[in-house]
Image (spheres, helix red, strand yellow):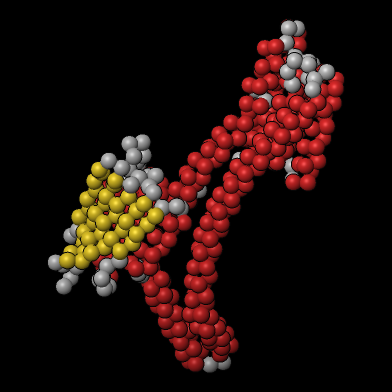
Length: 383
């Protein structure tokens, strides 16, 4: 996982837990209400067999719910959980069907859970077919046990449809969140790839012509060496000059590539934070800062952004750079400094920044006020 993805992934994990909890709340139709049938069953053998069937159904239902909100789970485990749920659903007929026969629609409640789980197992058309088969099975159980057919239809069909709608909506929202997170990751990868391609094009444009000329002159020098040593030497010297010139141009290009544009860095960090769900306000400096000051503040900005995404649970962030009396000041504040978050014991980023700024004549200061964490860095600016 990249640092920039940490904050978004943390929120995605919280959303996953909420979705799973919402799915689990529907388990009352497969655990509590069938349990009423166990309480009304006088035969201890049927109570034991029914309890086993209900417990197995609940466990299998939990496994399917877990796989529905765990997209990174191996497909083999997903198939096994679905197959296990199907097997348990079939076995629940002889185990739970006779429980409280005629007195309580015990299996009808399991049937409602089964209908409610179809959107998590199948696509819409097969899910409708499976739901219809489950309702028909519930009617057959009513005829077998002497229970009221209308009650079985209402519970398995009506209640089951309601549970299916809720489950489908929960999983749909979860799928949207996963797709959004995947889109953010793809956008980050695309931006990195575009930057690499841009640099590769720049290097190609710089070196393509020079290397072609160098190759031709080196070949010419090799051909002239046996017949005209003087001219071959001059060509070799020209090759050397061209190679040195090309090397200088590449160094200049790399230096320009690494040169710090603080405004661009501010915009990039702000965009990364917003893409990870952090509301970010960026106030750039008025006018351009000297290259030395911009370089130091850019290092602080990168470390502050990294720490915010890695070690905090911020909902908002403000980055402001001001310039006054020969000093440039960067202030980064956020609301993610809870008691249970913070840098690990091996983190030396801020300490290293303080030493770096001190060597440049600047300072680094941090504070925490409740959940608000503030980092302030100063660097001298030549008049």
